[in-house]
Length: 237
Image (cartoon, rainbow, N blue to C red; front, top):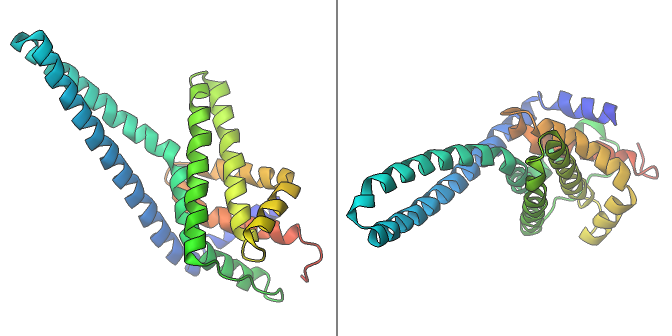
């Protein structure tokens, strides 16, 4: 497993991977900005309506206190959006990975497994659908884990383990779907869930590093391509 991680990290510095990184990181940033703007505008509209209701109920004298409160809430909201972007990064990278999985996987196969039968590119619609489903699964799991974050260290451990489970699942299935139907890829992930989870821990550690986490789709896909190959002893090396 460590050898697979080292190979994945080493290939991140290659020229083909750098080209994909620029595109995937740019898309991830755009998605995070769009989500942030959407949440900010939605909360601003909600606060405006709430302020109008308070002023109409309490009278003109409440205007200044309401403005101060709204200003403080806006600051807190802005900070919350920035913090939320960190938690949303694994969700966003699931969608990004679905769009670039074939470019990354093909390069891994070309460099490390030239004698093996190549995987089949995933249809764009299927890849995007699986990416969105994975992102929604990530969101649900993370929302369940967030309350535990309030328990200080224990909460962050729970969130890290949840990230490892989800990310391992996403990237292994993307790798396996290049060689098997979707149902079979999911079955293989269940059969090898222990190894997949360990690899997921490495991806979760990668995602925990600010800025560097933008390269998670490349690292996760490359790592799981190596893991998949090692879990298929019948395949020619």
